[in-house]
Length: 201
Image (cartoon, rainbow, N blue to C red; front, side):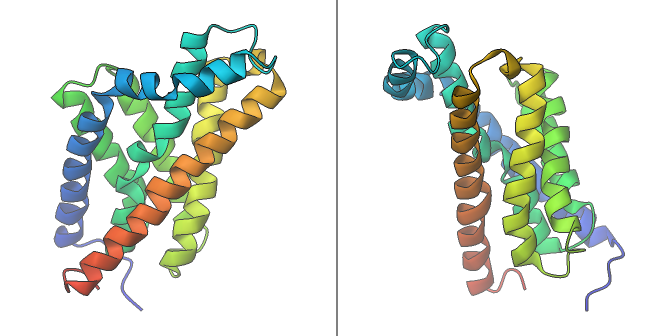
């Protein structure tokens, strides 16, 4: 079994993963309004079927867009955990990625860092629950714990408790699927490609 003690190489690699994905996060955040336009038909459907009839279409479109893209902003932690396999690396890499996104010029300012903290914590719980000994199990658990922690944060931050329960459940399902696809499936594909090229073990 690999030592769980951190080495300088691990710190550098975790930081590198964070920097790379910080740039990805920033680039993904730029076309946010385009994402809203694409998902407006879903918002229109929801506002027309009592689930969110008390909300404006623009607000619902923004909430659906946030739920559908959240997984993009939680990719650094899982891929770092798969590569480095050291306790705390999922949290650290996602935090660094969020910090880089904020420094580059995220339109969400300091909130970006707060999101990085809660998202990184959610991901870390998944890998920590198996003590980083079974990375694949940790990956899929992290999609669950990451979804619960990050959605819970937004639930209170954005006052989701004021909305219809069924509407909130729909948002959570979209939220989880986004994390499952981006932070789970796509990260697994990236990791598999890196292993195939012998860049990681």
